[in-house]
Image (cartoon, rainbow, N blue to C red; front, side, top):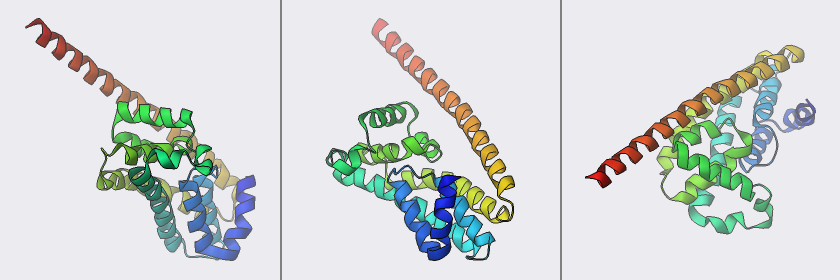
Length: 211
């Protein structure tokens, strides 16, 4: 709520550019909730300060360019970026290790899941770029598919809830809980697949050694 109240006058005054730049900041791992940013953009559209469909387009551009910059920085500069003072607070060793571990276990699907996990999104995309094993097209498809789910939900929720903030924040919390529940199910399923694949590889190796 505090972030929403902070963003409202800024977005009302500066419109699309303020929303776009704030989403770029979110892409760099700064702890500003992306969902609240998008909802606030929808609210100013609902109050007549912007067009909601244009706001959706701005939201998509902001999240994709912000994420793409982190992927590209990882691809071009790798560990040199992670050692810079401004990035050390965002790409902490713990977050970086968690991102690499998730990437090793779940492969490209972790980039889809990362869109919904603010704490891991930046290090996951950075790790994907740095790994040199993920093409830009693969990243774009996985992150873009996830953004096509999340961005319109938040923007249009803000638009339809502009006149009733209590209802809007209630729905926002329900959506957040629902998304985390679905992500939990998805992570369990991916973990099961990874375990089955590892078991099959171990069995094949054991069979080869026995022969």
